[in-house]
Image 1 (cartoon, rainbow, N blue to C red):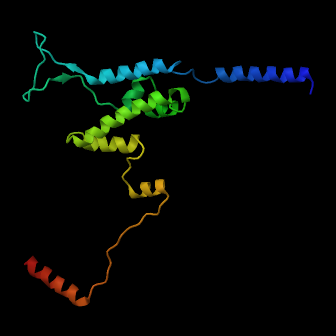
Image 2: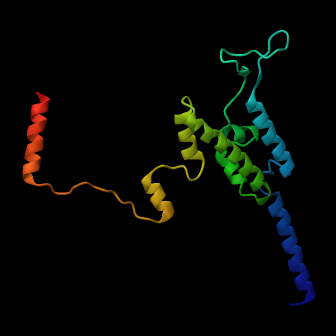
Image 3: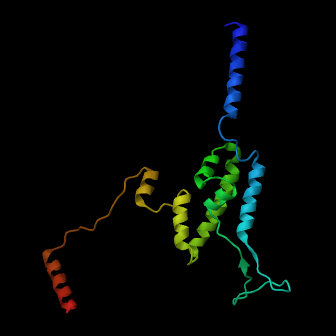
Length: 180
């Protein structure tokens, strides 16, 4: 291969690279810092604010705690919407970009922590359980899922130990006496 042929191939390769860079949607964020600002803004907006009286003093509830208004739960869908993604799945795909992986993982961990803490709250425990099982790894409670992850077979324990016939007849007679 001559030098001219090599140079021609390099030129074609450079042109192909330029085409690849311009195909598809432009990225939502140019830098990690830009994304992190939006993430921080989302978390700040979810906190809500103190309800104050006309003198600027915080209003307290009957337990003496300050009343917070406008607080919203931290959710993966809410984060995805705040960042301008179409769905939480789009956010997951964006996590595949190495530059943004850490920022998204930290945000997910914060939402997971919030959701996990809701398990101890009587009002939010069922919703928290659902969210953890569907949005975060390692929270699926099914035996089959755990077995798949560990490559272990599912074992069902069945209490079918044979008992003497006399003991079964005695229990049936006792049940009949108790029913009356």
